[in-house]
Image 1 (cartoon, one colour):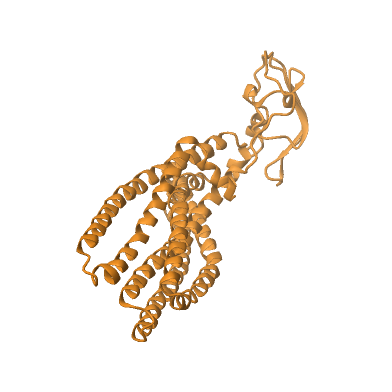
Image 2 (spheres, rainbow, N blue to C red; image 1 turned 90 degrees about the vertical axis):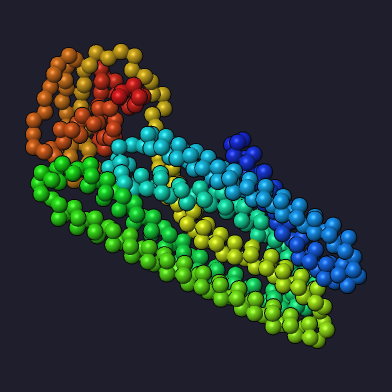
Amino acid sequence: MIKRFISYYKPKPIKKIFIIDMICAFTLAICDLFYPLITRNIINIYVPNQQLQVMVTWLVILGLIYLLKVGLNYYITYYGHIMGVMMQARMRKDIFEHLQDLPFVFFDDSKTGTLSSRIINDLMDVSELAHHGPEDLFVSIVMLIGSFIALSTINLPLALIVFSVIPFLVFFAMKLRVRMSDSFMETRETIGEVNATIENSISGIRVSKAFSNKENEIEKFENNNKKFQHARKKAYKVMAEFHVGSSFIIDFLNLLVLSTGGIFFFKGWINFGDFAAFILYIGNFLNPIRKLINFVEQYQSGISGFRRFIEVMDKETEQDDPGARDIDSVEGEIKFDNVSFSYDNHKEVLKDISFSIEAGKTVSFVGPSGGGKTTLCHLIPRFYETEEGNIYIDNTDIKGFTRRSLR
């Protein structure tokens, strides 16, 4: 599934924006890593040695770095979202075209509102993941590695104490990952049901009013609305546990740095400039961790939407039989030969039906509702496939014709 998601980055316009976006994100991460280093040198070297000119030079460089960050952030924010919208539009085009080729039986089993939810709501979250996901993951890795090297260089024992907390954060995130995935999937399914109920109610509002069916429609909506509300509550509960737990671990890490670093400073194991730089680098170290925490939530939300998108894309489309040809000319003789048919393997609608209609003749079918009159008509253009028997047009089995020409 991940490979199929990545494939949507391959079109040239999207690929170009993606590469530039990653370069900008990498440059931005490097810029953020410079600030603590410059601060350390100002405190440890330039101020004690009264190197005012050197300090001013580095401050000017720092100002230029901040100006560069403005341009980088603008590109990432604007063009990154444009890339996400382009991918979303392509996915929406793919699923819409795929729907046109799906058989009637698929739409018998699918509600219009649910399909609309997959095409619109789900793909919006996929778009956000497409933009922020790779970027946040890449920047976080660069920042973590850069901060890890810097912290280890400044004071390795203090850095090791800090890093000892990270496995607990990883374990906590992995423990809640599955619950988050399940809760997001349930939320998407229930909002699809709500959309389906609204669509059916509005499209049939004339019938509903004609038969005073207001209470029944409200009851159906309320049931689905409560299911959605319950699913959202479960999702928010998991999200709250995830964010509160991870925030507590990060706050504990900050406390650990201040207390342990303070002891190191009073013991003379670290000087003031190094301690200040260490605290700043801890900020650089914690920011990507926060991004990764948000990425976990965003990934579960986006990938659950993409999974529902794939469920539709994997549905088998209508295929013509090998050797099928277009109908060049039709005289119009139709013959049913021992045809049987049922919907979803339930009670048979048609059983051993045989009859012939001569070319040019007009025939009417009379019978009770549900007797199979419409089904007979739907079998001729192969909206549905017969379970037994054959249908012929001008003594040729309709399976020998392409569906497009039949219809």
